[in-house]
Length: 111
Image (cartoon, rainbow, N blue to C red; front, side):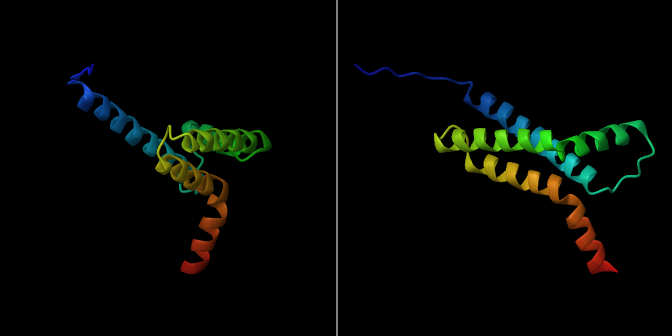
């Protein structure tokens, strides 16, 4: 006995997932720019976000980032998420934790 299931909402689900991915990537890009010190700390929003980035670079932030990396690694191992999520997370954490060194290196190349 075979059952055929027709579902017309597949494209809606994919559109929601795609929209979520774009929003997530935008958040990662914004955090990366904040870790690059491209903005002056003159307004309260920038100071607050810089406080978040400094917390993320602290011991508790590193432990949290490591736990998330383990969790998404396990999810990838069991084929629950795509490898691009793991790679994107690693690149994002590299930018957040290594942002100061990257900016210093690029400034050294320019000047």
